[in-house]
Image 1 (cartoon, rainbow, N blue to C red):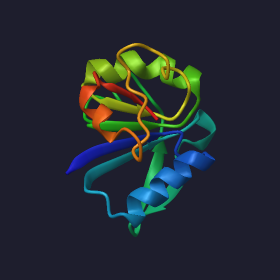
Image 2 (image 1 turned 45 degrees about the vertical axis):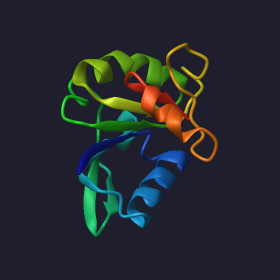
Image 3 (image 1 turned 135 degrees about the vertical axis):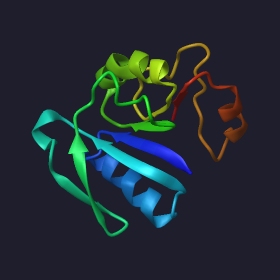
Image 4 (image 1 turned 90 degrees about the horizontal axis):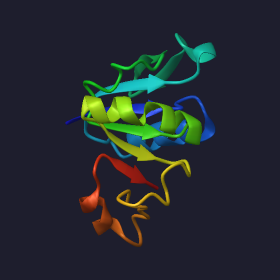
Amino acid sequence: MLKVGIVGATGAVGTEMLRVLEERNFPLSELHLYASERSVGKQISFRGSQISIESLTEHSFNNLDIALFSAGSEITKKWRSAAEKGGCIIIDNSSAFRMEPGVPLVITEINPDDLLGHHGMIAV
């Protein structure tokens, strides 16, 4: 079971990520939702429970296995180092690192094996 965070959880893509995790009964033991300061404290329903939106901090990633990012390139760039320090894998939906050497750009229907070569950052 994985500990998962969604960065940009209240946006259109973040909401869809949350829906897919629920629909596919993704095996997670914890789910943390992050969004802008104006959304902090709001509640989102997931698997019959209410989860509060949190603020990102330097320590947000310390207990996460995976963070799904859908909050734009600047947010991904800002928090990449904290995620790496926390041992968290980023799966990023922005264009921030799509062309960076060593960061696989993965389209699961085309090159799923490229997931095996990541170093803590995966672009999708």
